[in-house]
Image: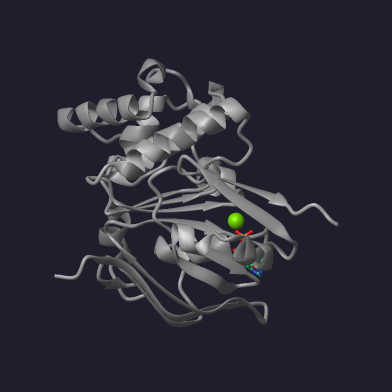
Length: 264
Ligand SMILES: Nc1ncnc2c1ncn2[C@@H]1O[C@H](COP(=O)(O)OP(=O)(O)O)[C@@H](O)[C@H]1O
Ligand SMILES: [Mg+2]
């Protein structure tokens, strides 16, 4: 059996007559952890929405977990994919407790209605909360959390169903330095665990790439500038082309830094 979890075959997305993604080829296997880098508007969110089976390509095929997006039964596919983005965060009721936000994922619903939760769900939710350093916040209302805590709750919710693919769209956006480092460290631990699912994380910043990530895709104007093994892909040359200005990349201890090259 193939351990491919995701493949894109000449995938294009056209909106309002504009090609937002153009001829994307991509393959992700279960042991890989991908970072997607690109400027605002490069097409990153459009790309991961396809990978999350949350939208369809205009042409080409997207196959997720052996199901073709657009043809598969979404109700069966969705719980197998963990997906967190700021848009989804906005749909979480502010008064819902942290434990409920995470536990309701077991039923793939947002907001707690009348479900009866199994004891096994409660136990799993508590374990997931502990994994993401949220155990002391289980009874807090989601709306009262800090930005960093909210991001961790969203990730905990995304992994509650034990997905085979985890997709995080800009998980560290808007976080202060301490919260960012806390999150990147947790993501690094998760990525480094061989029991974890395939991961795709979108970011603008090389500094937000966690340890344990194996691959990178660099996107510019809906097309791939470079994609492949992380160290070979995240070069100064490729990043300069991606962001359209001269950039120097360096790495230390598995973490990356990128800065504009000083003009002569
Ligand atoms: N539904 C849509 N209709 C028209 N244009 C869109 C739509 N969604 C995204 N776009 C445009 O597609 C481009 C890529 O968007 P997006 O995937 O959100 O980029 P990123 O996440 O890299 O910032 C942007 O120029 C955006 O304005
Ligand atoms: Mg985006």
